[in-house]
Length: 396
Ligand SMILES: Nc1ncnc2c1ncn2[C@@H]1O[C@H](COP(=O)(O)OP(=O)(O)O)[C@@H](O)[C@H]1O
Ligand SMILES: [Mg+2]
Image (cartoon, rainbow, N blue to C red; front, top):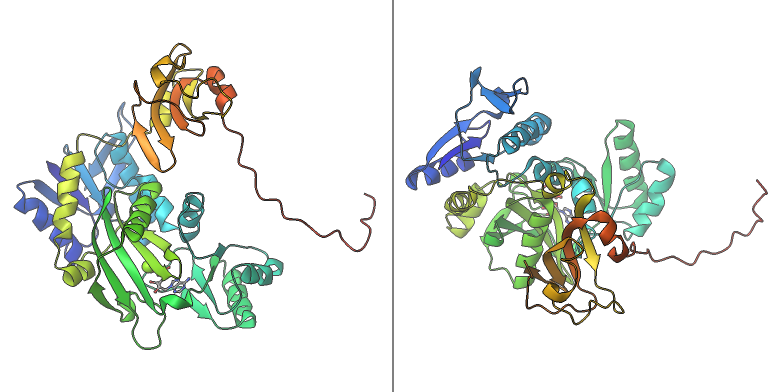
């Protein structure tokens, strides 16, 4: 294949290793400076210029987008996507992962353990938010920090309030997060490629530091992850839309707590700690996937008016229960079942033999009107019992 590595640091360890791994495998590879692209939307097809000249054809692109160039960098990646060039990490995936709040929001509905987190704007809401995540000591994080910079441990509520107020006054958004003391300055970095963890290490903070980042003087050791940790890492990366990711997890009392998902994980620490060829695994994965560039399925399918994608629920009392997909009548109603989700298992293309059970969720493409009656009810939130206010509410 012909591969472009997008990077502003051609001499960096990770870039060098990826380039070497691609060359060793007989691929054509170029490291291109992300900031020297020009997005060309003047013609009839999406195009890219590089250093003032039309970019030649590539089969795949591996983005290594630094924090300081997220907007431009993801625009370039999105352009490659429009040109049907395969990328393991989509522009959306990179954007989702970059912002710690956005990442936490996206992961929050998927049953993935995470430290309790809150986000507020008004000074009046800070104290309650700190209490909700478990009180002091509490962790305060800038939304887009890296390498441990912008992660603060506040020992007392008053100090936390002062820090948050200060940061707010300089227009910085911050997360308020429960401090996971049992992980004692340690965390796990899992390198996810595709649907597996190819390498993992434990990082340990130095001295009385609670942040275990290598840039903060942390040390590392290779670890063998339990299936629970592996699953948390792989699912987090997949939900974010990343096929190459470094997933950071704290070792919580009840299992893994995902803190963040990095879309351009460094390779030096993890290759040295584990002795594994992570760069090679990334290149092999890309070479395997090259024929399958990212397609926005929903967007492509909804172009047919009146048709769309929906997730349907097999209700307990519905006449679908016990029937096979083929005899369910869905086909006659112009509904195609793409996948069947049952508990934590997924059956792709469940055409014939599978019998439907109550509670099955079917990802379908079809006429929206036909599917309307089978759309599951919106999830209801727990309603908290509220105490009535002591004072009568004044009439409006
Ligand atoms: N809620 C927390 N409880 C305990 N330690 C934490 C918590 N959040 C972060 N840390 C420590 O701080 C480090 C940096 O936090 P992280 O959210 O990964 O930010 P960064 O993007 O700067 O690496 C983590 O690797 C971990 O050691
Ligand atoms: Mg981190």
